[in-house]
Image 1 (tube, rainbow, N blue to C red):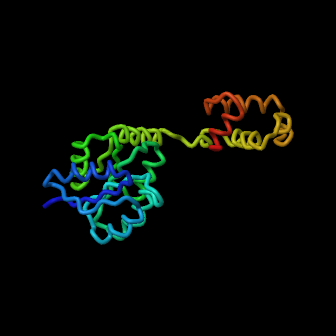
Image 2: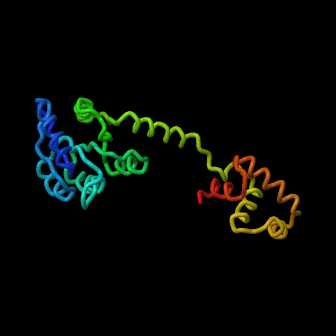
Image 3: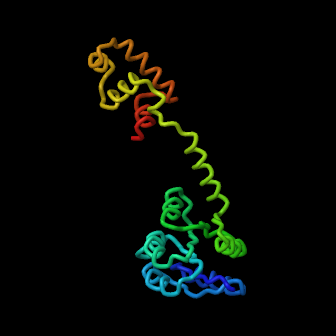
Length: 208
């Protein structure tokens, strides 16, 4: 049985090119091709394709918002992003919205066909550099330690006062310690956070 496919892409040359290529194979059946998210939102729940190949940058409603709104109305449909965007925010936003695959528009036509089959069989196909980005992001997330957790209570206290703009002398007076002791604590803070100055320490610890 053929895999039913819909294409949502505003560029005529891309949409028609995809449709013509996919239609060459008896493995696929293109049952819809739409230029806007609004049109897709109206039609997709009616035709309920197995796979939707979805652009992000559509006029009006973008592809990610279209997926958010249509996925519950067509629960058997899976979504493959097909876009020029490869920044982390767009990838995560698309996957959170309900996309199961993510291909860049420089992907070869044969690879697109294989990716559609993979998606239909339960995989999550992604362009190689997107997959690499995802692996690196998760690897980096595992390595991260909450920076404040590596500081002592006194060091956290001093860093918070630094963030408020207090001078060393003012911090010393507020905490009842000497200016020299404040300097020692701050030196240790910089060492632990691997930073060179007050601004870097505040940004790294508080994400500001």
